[in-house]
Length: 167
Image 1 (tube, rainbow, N blue to C red):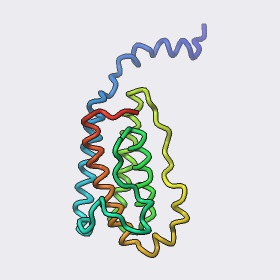
Image 2: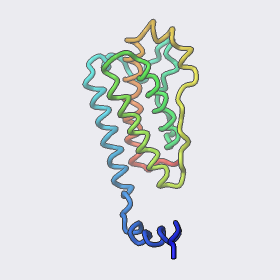
Image 3: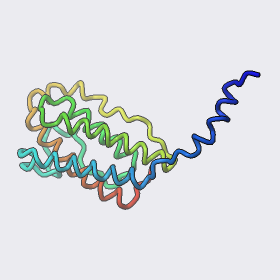
Image 4: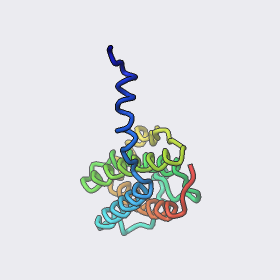
C-alpha cells in the first residue's frame, strides 16, 4: 500500500508538535535590545547631537517626528519611512542602521502576529522619488535630522513596548 502526503503528515505530526515555539517574551526582549543597539549606533555618530528631535527644519517635513499613540502598525509604517530615507542617503554611517531597521521591522511583525494582528508590509514613502532635489541639496541636514528624529522615535518605541502596544 502506498502512503500519500496525508500519511506522511500524520507520521510527522508527533515530531512537529514537539518543536517549541519561540516565547514572545524573548522576541520582545530581542526587540528592545535591537532598539537600544540602534540608539547607541546613532549616538556614536557625532554630528547627530547638534539638532533636537523636536526641532522643525523647513523642507524636511517628510521626515516623521514623534507620534503620541504608538501602535505596532504605526511603528512599522514609521520605521519603513526611516528605512527608505536612510537607504537614499550616500553616507556610510547609516547603512548598518538601515539594515537594523529591517530586522527591527521583522521582530515587530512577529510581535504583531503573536497578538493575532498581522501587519501588512508597509512600503514607506511613495513620494520619496519626488524629493530627490531636496535630498541632493541638503544631504548632511537630511541625515542629521533623520537620525535625530529616529533616535527620539526609537526611545518612544522602547517606552511603548514596556506598556504593551496595541495593533
